[in-house]
Image (cartoon, rainbow, N blue to C red; front, side):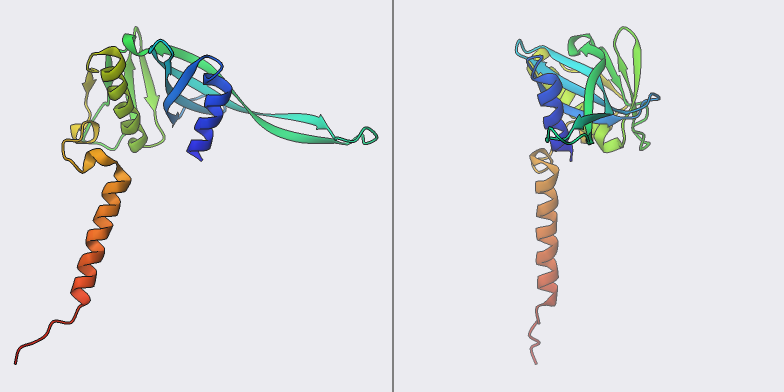
Length: 189
């Protein structure tokens, strides 16, 4: 679902602006509709953050036949950016409390923007993308406060290879242990 949504936003909103959508998360906003916090890269390697609002609009279309007077409805998503910032202007990302499973975080630009992600894992995934883009395109480390560093900058070999690979390795080892525990052990008499 999220890959289809990413492709749709890329096609409709970011590609016409000559940008590449790198990461996005769904966020909670007081206004109606779905909202996303997106980070994109322009051709000139300028990294932008934006709030994108998705509204579902119903449009009626005439049926294909000229004689038919029936209309059919089509549900179509419309995307528009409501706020935009440059990553260069981001001075601090504040996770509020690293010891609490809180999906809320603060983005410090000229003003502080409170963002509430749909989950804590989405918050950390987005911040990891911001850290990587800041290192790559802005040649500076991003100023972070109140985050669990084990989830931001993995230090072990295995955690850097992606969550799915780590999970599959754990499952493989667990399966091996189960198989070994079920093998009969010859008793010497």
